Length: 180
Image (cartoon, rainbow, N blue to C red; front, top):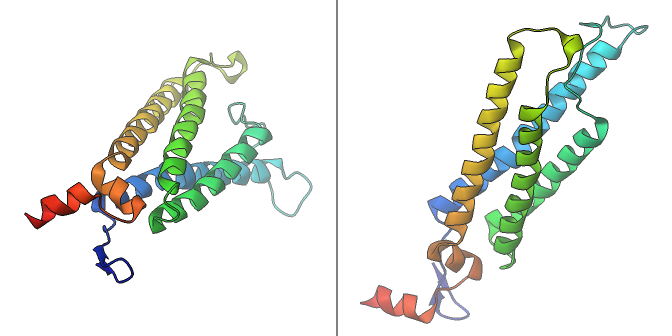
């Protein structure tokens, strides 16, 4: 594509940028929204006592998930979705830096949550069962995803094709090397 105003070539959005944005949206918006929705659904269904619906369970423990954490998770997911939308468009040019900072902040937030959940001892009132091992494994998998996806996003968004896409133009030495 060519920019008619400057008579120069406009860098395209590469497949790596697409993967980076989609993976980060999945990790930082879709999965948290699904978690919030599932927990809120369970809390509303188990909390109904005198309503028309009978509760599906009584005395359920949701692992210490507080409403403040749910609100923070939902707000951060919504804000990241807006950032990802502008990163997809590629405008303004500073959105690359905003996306990188957002990925770092959310990685720290969710990695900290996973690490504290892994090392939190089980509640003795819950009894001893095999769910503790499954819970630990799921948190380890989540921690791995919370570290691998951001590493890819940070690596790719700092490559020359991604920088050129967000800048909106190639550097002069890039254009000279393409002409040869």
